Length: 574
Ligand SMILES: [Zn+2]
Image 1 (cartoon, helix red, strand yellow):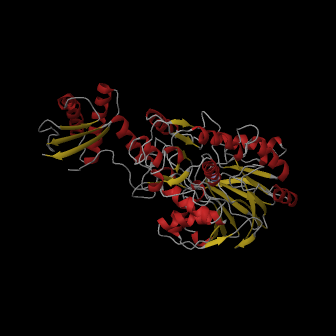
Image 2 (cartoon, rainbow, N blue to C red):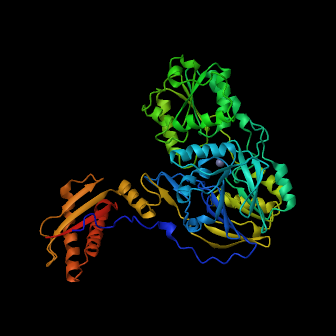
Image 3 (cartoon, helix red, strand yellow):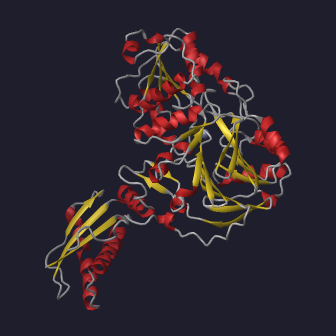
């Protein structure tokens, strides 16, 4: 008997990740190789590897969050397989800022080589170290700030202040004998940021003057016309919520959006409300941001949740996680009445965040539930409570005109964003042949000041689920989706191996069907026919016999139910 036979989910191999790299051309002396392993053709898991004179520098190592068609997946990593046998050649990982899609993959990379120096700004490293602690990893870190210039192996790196939706972001200029490369990281050009730290266009101009050979530019908002408005423009809407809410104010935002949370804290202070942070990552990150001086918490404003609950509702503000409808985060649990905080009539819930594509259904579900409990829900769709963290088309055009790069590689975006970003570069005078639209795994060589795509390396999706890294494959996800949408039928056949005849009626075990068990017995003639064929053709391999039974059962199920369930045939010799 071959239990659980049939189309076994592949547990080894890695689907797309197993694509073999084509033979790469040799990298000429004084050539710089740039290999984006993530973030091109998708929003997330940003990672770029630079190779010069046999040494490697990594910029960012983030995660991508799964969509509904990737059930059971926690996060998705870049594929490290091209790096794996050359990890000893990595001189540093430079982190541009502390968002998950830029730092979330670091614990998994450090598991493969723990002592790679991790370079970043103060807040970025603090967020990273808190995350690594949960993985039991103590990293080797190198703290840098804007205007610093440091050398890692052959890579001469200069750090430049950029403004984004998390404080302390850095762009990085990388100098080698191959030329000067400028990587923006995530950025925008808010001219009135709350911390006064603007994107350093003077440095961009100076580098432009020196001659930027390749400019890697954030594409996230390249399709959005005009300019991203200032963070401070949200304050009237936040102020209105605090002024007009008779009950509690419950604000949900990203646990890294220090400036947004600063605005909420200021409004709470102005309106005589005390505040508690709710949700593990919110409590942790705001503690770090306050300790390091990035968040200014007025004395006595933030108190313990238990103490806060004793106060009248109109003196209460809560700042919690869950703005993307994440099922386990505080806000979703409040919406589901699965949290000690009971949202009720008179409360306002303020979703001070973006609505990340793919999360819409979950977010609207949360909004509907909260509304059902009587709360007034204020969100991006009905008030000005969110601005983007990324440069829009107008800002990108400014950047190109200031930097005047010879070649451009749009990064951080889906194809449409990369295309739109390249088009902006071309409109500012970049040679269309030098505006490179590349996919994850593309190999770009910068030689004699000319950047060209010369090959590719594996860059498939590596799934992390509860138990494994890279264990789940496209095929196993296909099986999970089939189980969810089409159901499963197990058919156990006891067969006389000499005659190929069923010795009794097969057992049919079905899930996800409304049919009575007896209904499936109508499939028996088709199954017997498959077994007879196998016997006539002297097929003895049990897997081949099971495959014939699976096909017969599958065809029958489709004819009868118009569905394609997962079929698990089990053949037992009589
Ligand atoms: Zn970011």
